[in-house]
Image 1 (cartoon, rainbow, N blue to C red):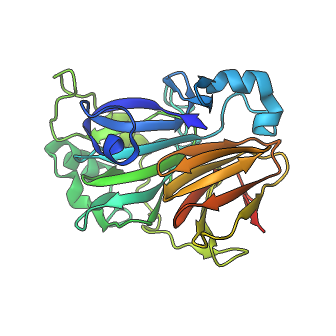
Image 2 (image 1 turned 90 degrees about the vertical axis):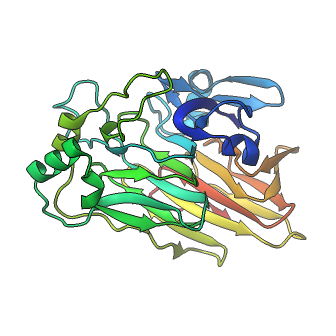
Amino acid sequence: MCRPKMVEKVWGGQALFELYQKGDAHQKWGESWEVADLPEGQSELGRDQHFAPLHEWIEHFGKDLLGNQHPGFPLLLKIIHAADDLSIQVHPGPDDISEIENAHSKDECWYILHAHDDAFIWHGLKEAGTSRDVLQNAISDGSITDYLRRVPVSTGDVISIPPGTPHAICKNIVLLEVQEPSDTTFRLWDYNRPGLDGKPRELHQGAGIQVMQCQAQPPTIVQPVQLSGKNHSLLLQRPSFRLEKVVFSDLAQKEVLHFPANQFVLLTCACGETEVTADNTVEPLRAGQTLLVPAATSSLSLQAKERTELILSGLGPTELVKLG
């Protein structure tokens, strides 16, 4: 089981505690780093009260944990609560990082866990081909959202944010974020808002304009594709990661999940609760929790306690699980 690193944010709130008992009720939690192996933050992995940093597990178990060797864990997985709007921001891609010091490529996606009826995000430019000079002026005078797509979102929506896409999560949204293992973010506009320390938050307008994709814009809401069973669907395939969804609604039947050889898989419970059995050990997996299935594990069984939705994250490009 994964134990997250909690991160306070100026735009955070109490939903991570109220929904998932993460952190405590007295701080503005914005991010729960469920699976993280970065210098900026480490999540932990373990069972009962025996947990250790993820990088120690990688050092000790290597290929049995990750499959093909990686210098670190190849994904970063977060649960985010936006009690207020996040900054308008953009991330670099692989073609940008050689030109910007200490930058790392960041391709990401969102799965909406909870959203108010009027919730929306900013995602991409309204008009492809908008010039960088126009965007720079809009950033400078605070009118950048006039040039962005306002996209209503609801629970279950999937949004892809390729590098170079200007975007922002807006208030009253809780989501699962899966991405390349990078914390590189270029803030374009932050509403002249002070940070938790009372000082203005740093902006990165020059680098942000440089990496922004001003031509073809990505689709907004990604439509799922049914896979091998009626309760199993592909949510998104990107070059660096893959997302699938499995729904368990038959409470009387145990489901066996078969995993591909030599690949780890992350199971995140989006809603409901299930019992997971592996090696004669039974462990609950509740809403908001993530289980790392090691590459050496070929199968495990699940017994849903109520209607349960699992989001599966991995590298792909083949299916992350087979049911039956």
